[in-house]
Image (cartoon, rainbow over all chains, first blue to last red; front, side):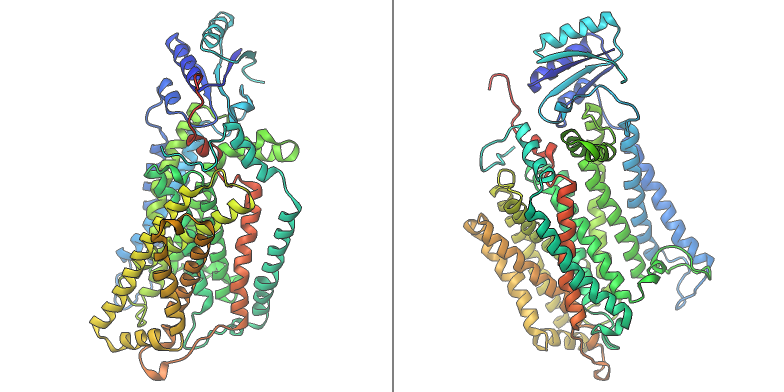
Length: 168
Length: 444
């Protein structure tokens, strides 16, 4: 079972979130129509693992970019004006572009992986959370925890509290 | 955070309603305009192109002395125009400039569509477009790969990367807004936007990841954008043609690109404000900031132009001096001086705040700057190749009616793509505009 509390004011929403985490609820989602740094702090979200994807993509891209340029030059050798077959300055440009290309693609993959998107199953959601409401969702609560969560959410000034199934 | 709104602060719900209504409600005027731009693109761009494909690339005004012409100058122009959006958006994101938030989405779209238009010019220029895949990094039937030492291959890699990165950049920033469209619509549109938004709910974790990913995109995109136009400049500067073989070309092109792109943003913002009624969101603070940026870019651009004249005179190479003379007092001299007036002198008017805050005057200035920049690219191509070294190699280039028609038609293609875009993606970012609003408090 999940408990959803809807708030009109950001400050009430943050207060509910803080009280819930202080009371030991660790499976909560905070839905808002805009990014709120304070909400992220309440959940203790620090540095995102996305950065590892970006770094890995950049390294793989750079290596494969240079390998492509150098490898293709070696596969079919075309000596030009006595210059080296593997010429570093022009190949570094290809390396650089591929580094960025792979970095960007891996960052996109990282974003999807870390934020668990696409969402393969329905999760508790209110469309007003994409307009002007702030929603606290306590997921996986048993009946005793649900009562406690409802009290905390109501006390913080929720407009509405409802019980929903975790997965519809 | 400064106040962004000329007409009072809207509520969060107003933001959704105002911006989404431009997508969800479509009047007759929109369809008429779209029909006009599509017809215009068909008649002025695609029909002459098909004619050229039928009779051969000789139908264009290019000849033995001038194998590069208007198509390539347009290619540089459109690549340059693309530099405003993604680059400016990324730089302003990294510097945390709040005035970026209302204008960046359309600016990024401008990047994407300018790049697509530029890519079309490559296809038009190469003549036999069905062989365009030869430029991709794949081996041909002889096992021969493209030569990665050529600036043209740098170009292919850079533009492919830039197009991919710009598409991802605009998509990433739009995911939360796609979710808002999903929630505000029904039927097929709802199903479609459910796919586009990937089930976005707006949880703190999703926002947190998006913020980090977006910052990394911005970090990747800034040097990428600089590299793209530097590489375009090397298409010219790595040749030994007098008038093109300058080390200053990379910063010159990058500066010119950002300059014309920023002017393009002013034009697009004017249209959005006027036709989509975004007066509430795109205000004088944006115009003022863009005006100041344009003045700065104009001064840098002017400085580089003076430097180019000086280094040619100081170097004293006869070929370079001859190419410069042809540019300053030759057949195309009126175009050169038109460029100088439009890009170096007209922007100085923006030193006056009264002019910077007037939408009509800024529209006029931005259009003049881009006419000047289009001319600049034409001059670079048309006055260099036909004046190579010895007089017996001298020639002359003048665009044919096909090239002129295709140039005009390219603007219709850009307009068509942009008109389609505003019906598929919110032209202003919903959540970023909300970030600029003061949060509603219980005691307020």
